[in-house]
Image (tube, rainbow, N blue to C red; front, side, top):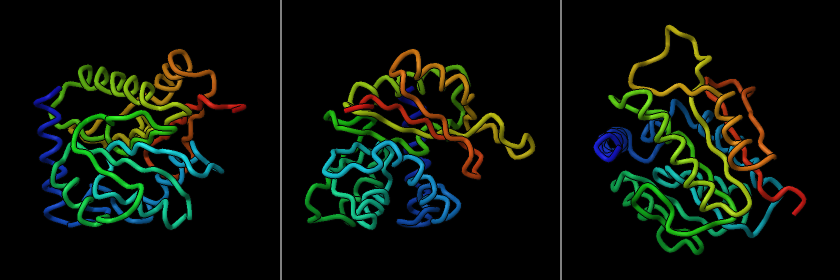
Length: 209
């Protein structure tokens, strides 16, 4: 998938160049939908403080700012395949304690929790089967680097057919729910009721901890 990921990295770098450090710069429609996604993903660490978090596909670091707005204390690592995104994130968060950024596909540490927002959506010309395999391999990586749990979102196969695009990946929520239940944890939640053409899955490994 290296060639496909390099192309996707360029895709997001071009979005940043065109729109700057904004929701549109990471290919979201609005700040409102971006915050809505953050809220669903952060259910994985709801009620927790002083935790560590890996943010895979961090873009310019909007989730780091959102956590500060919420008053949540965490040791944050943002990871993105787009080098210009990481450069911008480091510029915007220079000097912030407990906040670090890394260019690449995967975190260089284990954390209490991990989140991945939008990283499975844009596949460009990658074949569906190959991208599905990439998604499952990436989930293995999220699980391996998350001690207490992780969360991710995907576009849903239940999107309106006339709006679906060939360069995007629409996942089967039931299939991924079953995969996560069987492979990662008995405690998995599927959230598909927040008004967007996508779903969020929470994999909890610390229930009762």
